[in-house]
Length: 146
Image (cartoon, one colour):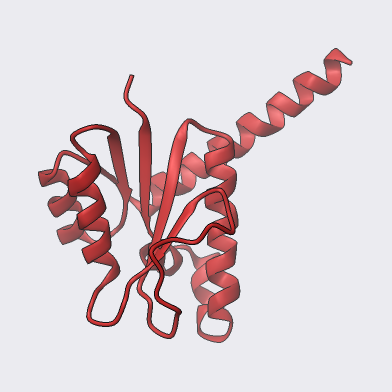
């Protein structure tokens, strides 16, 4: 069975989820951290390896941060998050089960042409909720067995 990789278009998710988008203008870094925490919980409660990609406007360019279990990428000057997402999908789709979470229609078509699967922000939200439920149920089973 191939390893499952989830690549998330960070700002696409933020701007589709009202609980995050409403705070973004005044609390951008904190909102990105909230999304990162949600995606870390998803990785912890599923069999996905998660990477999130943000447009790097105002951010320190980075190939990836090691501060969390998930990989975090910021685009550099002259580059977009879509460029990074497409590069990652093209690189890994042949050897891994790659899923890209984005609501950008053109981006969805592009990554699908590389062999990746595209899911929407709504579908990603459902995956996050399912992983959270799985973790809660596992904890309850462990506590009951004590």
